[in-house]
Length: 123
Image (cartoon, rainbow, N blue to C red; front, side, top):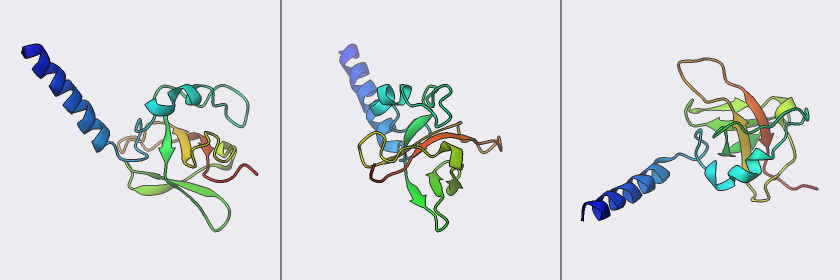
């Protein structure tokens, strides 16, 4: 009986964590495409974009000047994507934008975006 209750609690906690995960938050949505993220290369061609749980689907918008910004829930604001990080549109074929970045922390002012794949066609 105890084992069944413990398993039910674990499943319940996992569901609550998934439901509490805000789209674009660090680590949110990483697991579903982890294998693809591991093979993601930056436009510089050096290294990998993925380092643990730092890649995830995000909300993105194309600015008037043609640059991109991503919504970072932890900061509650749009963050500009550096031009060097912008890669192939719809790289993962799911119609979503994806980003790899450092962990957004309010106590540490340094935040870097390593790789970004905007929503859009590949043509």
